[in-house]
Image (cartoon, rainbow, N blue to C red; front, side, top):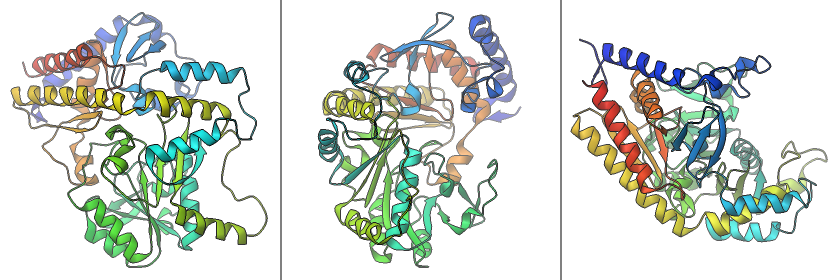
Length: 450
């Protein structure tokens, strides 16, 4: 008898086949919606990464619910993998979009909202000098240009298994303690180790050794590793990064694109971090494609001095549609009416209920799993915990189990993130939806262990 994460392999195979048949039988319209005009039948290749036999085609989304073209309604705990963390089309954001659409969509000049948005960003996240991008990938890429410009150093230090969008510099890993290009990169012929060095999360000694070489411009990290199995920082690790950066003349970049789930102002504000550069994306404008990045005033002054001395010509930073008036309108609405302490209180209370409920189910079934939470973000992990680093997080992934659980949850009306076992609670999420998810989780695990 072969067990995978505590479940019989044969049972996994049987239940997966049954759940796939159930899903397909109820969604004839979604099954027939693939188009040969799209590469691989979908407009973005990630859309084929869900564990379902074929993507469900969404007809509408509102609050924390999705409706597909076959008429199925599901409770949405994926929420666009954080892009709609505050719910689908928050009313304040929808009103802002409608109003701004009548005043123009893009004109490459500041709108009347810009000054207020800058002030609101500072009030929410801290004293930074801000810039707007369209995605967090762009924001990280531009910020890395700045840190290299002001330090004169070529490398960025990232952590094994990190996720910072699709920035090439971060697509490195560790092989027997040596930085390498990540396996599986498509069309990447550059040696990324010339501009990046990789360490394990929670390993201050490794970071200290890398920074001592004097060629690292910045440490780029999430305060909690996400987009894999979540890894929490051990006590003292984040302050240790701050201290090591100060000691070795590197800058500290905190990417809060996922950990903005922590609370009002993100993990940085809630836990009193002091980064030199702050990055956030996805949900900061209520679902409108937007990211923000900010420099501490001292770093901004250093950048201004370098910029004033550079040769004339294009800096290679920025995109035409970034900082458009629609982004400012949505940022203003989100920061004033959606991303509020009151909404975060609601999210955190229900996320705690979800975390406790899932953990109770795991304990009831005596599985070697654990559940972890960061504010409104909850994950079940099919391995013992807590996890210490990216290597452990990669080993904790159990696709054969996760795919069956995901599909079983969907067939019971609950959608979670496809790339990992992440669930988000939004201001629109209700207690009954959380309880339905816990009950569905118990039901599918009971079925797998029968």
